[in-house]
Image 1 (tube, rainbow, N blue to C red):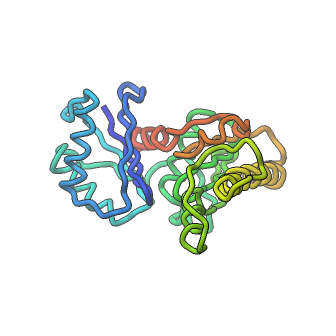
Image 2: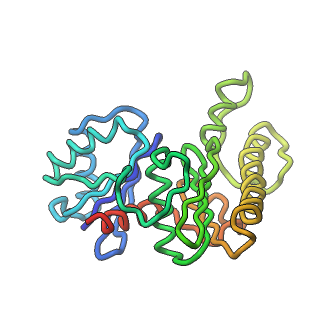
Length: 256
């Protein structure tokens, strides 16, 4: 079995693969620093609670946008699994041609998403929208060239900014409102978060297809924690919340 871990700014998102099938997914808050022992005990505990023997894990793959966590994760993997994890980072084989001016700047999670998209939808142009702490848009053409992308404040960050920097605006639940025009402060904030992001992503996808993919057929993929919130709007051709783990699993095999 393979344990795949995506370490984000807000959460550690993990999954276990067995014969290419995902048996388990889990999340852990990553805002506060965790020692190698805390991470190791958590990982073993979550596996046992879901009926998976930790000794059955024979490979671990990690991508992280939080460099400080990597040291603790290496220690956890070594002490609690007796394994040296594969870290998706500069120099790893990806199967992609990175067109960033400085390829090292591309986040490991964005690379993993792109690898996953190229694997699931080969020979296609891809626009990947990932709803995490930041909302990222990545563009990959049918030749597996990573053209670049867009980075926006995520839904939670946007809400926290409103709450922190205004006197009377409260924190709200993330929901899909029935009406654009809210009739209360809470409804108005929910509308702004939801429809603001919806309209923005529709226009971004349209402009990217026109200016960077020559209006050729493209697969728009939604992924990340809040992607299902927009499922009914049909702005995605495919909804793959676990895309980063699929890509990380593929990256591990490329670098075997």
